Image (cartoon, rainbow, N blue to C red):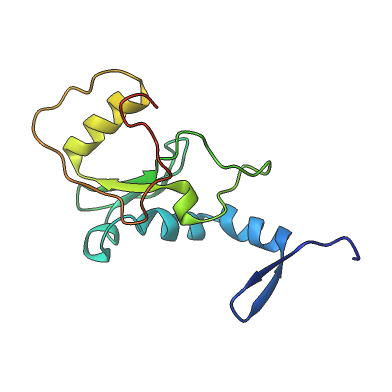
Length: 129
């Protein structure tokens, strides 16, 4: 239609609605959130969505999920990119830290955590989300 918005990607044209549908897919979310860590870790990690629903069960004790406390900027509730989602992958101790951070409480740590954020973040305050 004449009022269709087009998102231009390298050598490809997608209607914006197609990009939103793609980013809402479980496959895209798994790929985007897994991008936080090297593939030797993330390929076997449990992947959670922003509601902590399991998208893929893992086998190595690592977990990856979006960590942007503001949520998606779009009205459709879909991340525009992996970078906007600010994905994070962490080991079991990192899960303890994440639980505390998300609850706005001091995390109860049993040991140091290992956490990857290869996509970076957008300048969040990690002491007070």
